[in-house]
Amino acid sequence: MNGELKKIKKLYGEDFAKMCREFFPVILGKEGELLRILLENFAPNHMLYEDLVKQYSLVDFVNYIYEKFETPKEKRFAFDENISTPEELFEKVGYTLFECKSDEDVKSFVKYYTDKEALCTFRDPYRIDNYRIFFAVKKNAQEIKREDFKKPQRQDEYGTSVISLQFSKGNGWLSIKNRYNHTVSNPDATFGNNLENICPGLTKSFMKHYGINNIRKSGDTTLELDNYVQDNNGKYYKYNYEINNVYYCADNYVIENGEARQYDKCKYELIDYFLLNKSTNKMLCMLGSLTHNRDSFLDEFQDVKKIDIKKLADDKKVLVITKNDGNSFSVVVDKCNRIIGYDNETITSIDNNFLYSNKYLKEINIPNVTKVGNNFLRVVSFLDILNSPSLKLVGDDFLYGLIQNIKSMNIQNLEEVGDFFMANLQGFKNFKAPKLKKIGNNFFNFNEGLDRLDLPSVESVGDCFLNYNRCLKEFNAPNLKSIGDNFLPEDNVITTLNLPNVEYIEDNFLRNNECLEVLSMPSVKTIGSYFLKNNYSLRTLTFPELISVGDGFISYNRELENFNAPKLKKCGSMFLYANVGLKEINMDNGLVIDGSMWLKTHPKRKAIFKKVTQQPKESVLKKLISLFVSKENEMQK
Image 1 (spheres, rainbow, N blue to C red):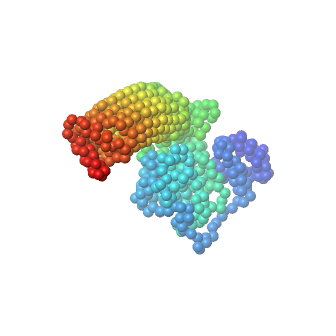
Image 2: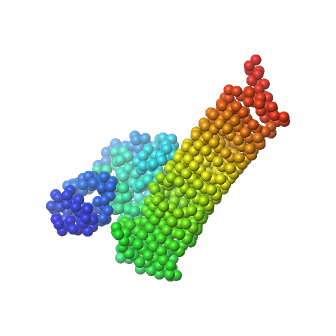
Image 3: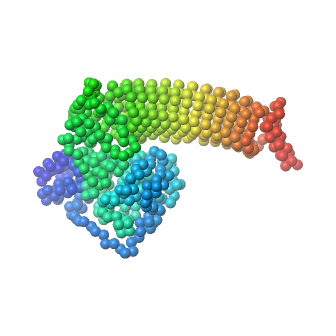
């Protein structure tokens, strides 16, 4: 027994061996049996015990091992002649099942996915050649809105409302893909990749009616562990990344289509989704035909003279890369060989897709970089420290991933950022960028904690600025001139907003903000539709330079009493619609109003009309008001 436990300790770690001594004394009584079961079902790794404890799966694991010991078997199905079709079984649980016969069929389902969560399948025209692809769509899928799920869970209503079932044509290996795609953990193992978790009988049904063999047997005990995947033989591997249905695992394993391949550890080092050839010092990105397969992380691995690998505490390692010109940089990896640190003081510019699919980077030091391209650290989730004091220009999707709580960020010299800048940063309270002048779309999208934003130099912001932010209290942007659609569309906290130099505003500015009490925009000239719709707190508004506004301008405002826009010339429909508290309006005689619904429902509309008509010049507005007044008089008679 002791000899067997020593082998288990070497392969799976000391804590795991202690657990085996406690829970498997009966199996250990049969020499070599426990080790055999473990090696047949779990690739060696020293994190298995830790993962079982963290995921509260220790009891399930013990039961799993005992079943393998007591009832080794290969179950086969005896098909019932009357077994329901997959379509009928999906119908029972509220889904409609579709089989895709072509790449065009596959792409027809992209409509159910958000732009940032679309499956890799939609970008791979050859996937249909190697897989049988099905989509199961809940009958109410179109009614389940992504924006209602701020904290996605893989098995929640949205994530499982549209699923893709993909069977390898070679061996029937199954992946059930989530509607969230990579926004949640293990999205390609929805329902544990077990058809029985969707509806009992589905496994037999697919085997009989579609002839798909070797699907995971419904009668077998399965153990669902996050970040573990089974190969075709049922063995579990801890994986670091799943990208395009390929799993990049600890201990130099790569699993594709259920086939596990281990690279020789004497010659190669699998780091994230890169393969380092130790003899040539070459680094290869293994992402295959993906559109983002050129990861600019590899740009610095040109002209490498040597790579030294040194051990650190906690089973970490540091790779020190020395180039032919004598410059060097370092990469730190954890015990799973995931990149967690990057330090490069010589690099000045970074191209697109830098560490595009890395999730686990914690610290990055690039003090002399002035420009980064698109998708910089796009899905990183655990970043603690970002030091880039020289950074000025940033492309799209900069730090797009779900970063929980960054501790230190030095990017104070930013001048321009693209779309989706830090779009999902969580727990971030305040942000200051004193030199930032131009901002793209979806700036700090889904950041629900930001309450102070200081942008003293910014001149333009794109669409959906702070989309879904509900906490902003202070916003300083004295030089802002141009604002895109949906500016602060969900904020309901800010009470005072001073934008002295804004000249142009697109649609839905502060729509549904109920708390704004003071708004100062003395320079604004053009405003789009639904400006301040449903604002319930403003009493006075003055726009001395305003010339044109779109539809629904300040409609449904309960408290607005005074409105002054002496230069206003053109309005859309529903201008000041349902503003029941208005007492005074000051507008130019040349005003043209599109539609007849302005001020409708106002109890003193006739009196207000008369005040406006007391201006000296004849105008379209005067004629329109006279028409209203005469019609009302006729009705009263």
